[in-house]
Image (spheres, rainbow, N blue to C red):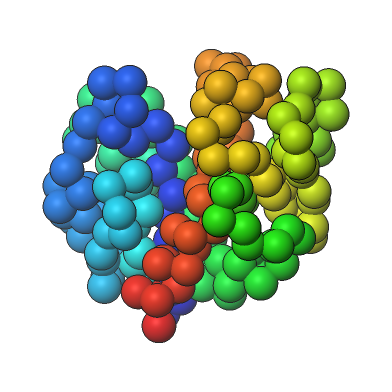
Length: 176
């Protein structure tokens, strides 16, 4: 069995509220094994022998039905998540957040285009490493930054989700 993490988009924000115990139950009911949640932001660790494309279809349908919303999730293996963490291009600094974006193939190019045309705070940076978009932003500026506002566009909601790099560390600890 392969260990995966499903990153759900838009969980516990803007009226889409769900308990992670209920989300885990949906995953178990669809046949996933070793299911657990990490934080309340929609990170579900599980094991399965099914291919990722099939898992995405089955789990999005089950989540949409169970919670009456249009579910978007992105599934990555333990190996992929370890690479996300290992490839962070920025130094960890206490006054900055670093995010990695999980999404559809090629979304990193769209994100970089948007980032390049946005107004930036001091030391706000972005880089793409091995197809993953990383964003460094001063703490307190994530949602107020020009780029942060772009990320909330409805036209992008099915293309990606982001997580603070600390979340990847927590996910990896549970997966091991």
